[in-house]
Length: 318
Figure 1 (tube, rainbow, N blue to C red):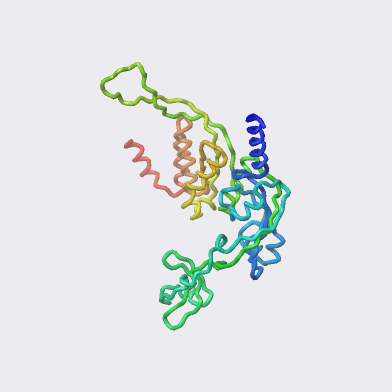
Figure 2 (figure 1 turned 90 degrees about the vertical axis):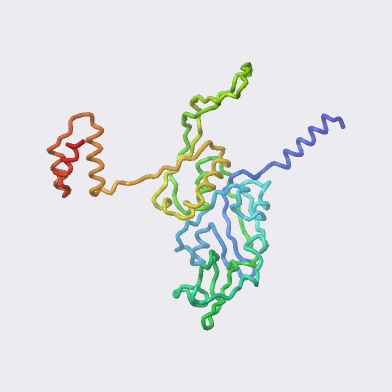
C-alpha cells in the first residue's frame, strides 16, 4: 500500500471513530436514575415517574434536558455509553458508587455537642449544617449527637435508563439547557451581533529606531461582538447559587456556545407608588425640552404630601 493510500485509510478511520455524538455536542436526553440496591429514585426527567414516586410537588420541572456532552452535567459513565451514538439511541448503564456519590466513609460519622444543632433539627433524621458540612442526625444521647456527614446516597451504585431524543443545534436552546442544569427558572434570552468600541494598541513602526522605548499608543476601533443577552428575573436576582457562581457559569456558556460575551440585563418593574410617580414626574421635567407646568407640579406634590415650600426654596437656591 502506498503512503498516500495509507494516509487516506488512516484519515477515513479517524473520521469513522469520531462519528456520531461527540464531546461538545448538545443532546436532549430523557432519563431515570435509581439506586441498584433498593430501587430508590435518584433523578428523573419523566413527569409520570415523578408522580408515581410522589415527588412531583417539588418546585422543579420534569422534562427531557438539554445537556452539553463533556460539561459535567452527567456522570462520565453515562455519557461514555452514548458517545459515538446517534439520536434515538437508548440504554441502561450502572454508575459505580465511587463515581456517583462516593463510597461510604465511617470516619464521616462524628460526635458533636447537641447544642451545635438547632433545636428544631435535634432529632434522629434531622438535617444539619455544621462548619459548612451537611449531614443528618443519627442519634442523640444526653448532650451529645452522632451526625453522619456522608452523602445520603454514599456507597450506592446508581442505574440510569436513558434515551437520546435528538441533538440540539439552536444556540438559544443550548443556552437554556445549560442554565437549566443549575437553575429551575425560565430565561428570556436573545443573541445579537453588536458593534462595540474597543481600545486597541497600535503596533509600533518597525522602521522607527528610538533609543528609548516609547509609550504604547491606543486607538478606538469598532468591532463586532456576538452577544447573548439574558434578562435577569427577580427570582434569579436573589438566587444564592446564581450570585456565587454566575461568573463561572457564564464563562462556560461563552466557551461552549462560541460567543464573544454575555450581557445580563436587570429588569426593575415600576411599583406605581410615591417613588415611581416622583421619578416619572421629574423625568418629564428634565427631558421634555419645554417649560415645566409649575402649577401642575405643585398640585402633584401637595397630593403626595410633600412640602412644596421646601422644594421651591431648594430650586430657587440652585
